[in-house]
Length: 442
Image 1 (tube, one colour):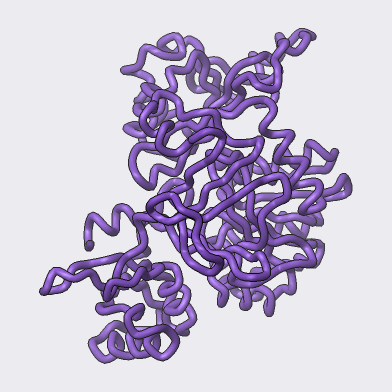
Image 2 (cartoon, rainbow, N blue to C red):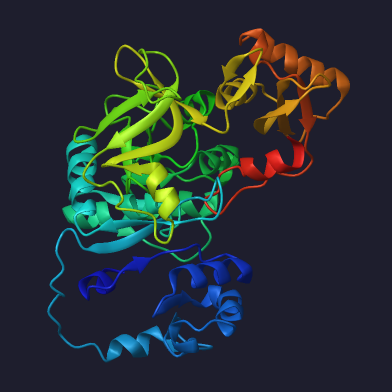
C-alpha cells in the first residue's frame, strides 16, 4: 500500500470477502494494471479475473501467500526489491480512491490526493483526538474500509505509534485476546461489533483496561449501547462520522468531551452548514442536509460525471445526510435524506425510532423504513430481530408499539412491527442494508 504510493501509483482497496460478480464490477470500473490479492480472496477474484482484460489477463496478479496457488507470490516478488527514489508526486496528484458504500446505487471511487491524508491526520488525529507515539492501535474493522485505513494505518504511522494487524476474522473472543495480549490503547470498532462483544460470556472475555478509548463509526451508535459498554468496561467510546468523500471523520466526540447520543463537534479545519431542500441555511435545531468543506474533500467520483456535479460543488461536499445541531455545537445524525419518512406530514428519523426500540430488553436489532398504509399514507414499519428467549406474537407487537409511544411523539412510533427470524442483511461495511430492506418490505 505504502509502496504503491511511493511509486506514484493510484491505489484502490476493496473488501477481500466479496463474491466473483462484485469483483467483476470493480475490475471493470477500476481497470487496474496490478492486483494484490490475499490467498483467501483468490478463488472468487480468480473467477472474475478469468473473463477480464485487466491485470495483464492475470500475469500481473500478485498473491499474498506463503505458497501461492496462482499469480505471482508476494514474497518472491518483493525479494527482488531494489532501492528506489519516491516518484515525484505533488500534494494535488491523485493517490487513492475510497469507495462509497453504495447505499444509493453502485459503489463509486471518490478520488483523493496525496495532500488529503496529511490534512485530516493533522487536524483530526493529532490535534482533535490526540493520538500519540506511545499508542498501540488495533481494529475490528478491516483495512479496506477507509475508516480503518485512517485509524489503524495512516494515523499511527504518522505519529510513530504501533499497530496490531492480523489475518483472522475479527471475532469478539479474538479481539479481547489481542487487546489484552498486546496492551492496545486505541481500538477501532463499529456498533455491531461493540454489541457482539457485550454479548460475549464473561468467562470468554479478557481484561481490556489498557484501552484509553475506542473509536466507533460506520453506523449510528445507539445511546443504550454506549451506556451498556460504559457500564461493562468503562472505556470511553469516541463516536464520529466521516465519508468516502471527506477521506475520514469530520464530526466527532473526543477524549474528555463525549456527549452520548451525539456525534460530537465539527473538527476544526472543516466548515459545515445545514440547508433545506431549496439550499437555504436552516435555523439551529432544525433538521437539514449537511454541506461540508475542507482540504480533504474528494476531487470527483471516477467515471461518474453527473454524480460528481450533484455531490461535489465548488469545494463543498453535498452529503445527502440529514443532521441537526444543538445550541452547544453538538451534532446529531438523523439519517440519509432518502431514509427519512413523512408520517402525518412531519419528517421522522428512522434512527430515532430504532434507538428507542433498541432500549427494549427483548430487541436484538431493528431497522425502520417507510411503508404505505391502506390509504396510501406513509407510516413507519419496524423490522425487528428478537433475542433468543423472546417470541413474536400479536400481543408482543402491541407491547413494542406501546413501548415506543410512551417514549416518542405518537406519530413517530411504528405503525407495524414485522418480526424477522434471521439477522437483518448487511452490506460489505457491516451496515444494515436499508436499501435491500426497502425493496423487500417498503
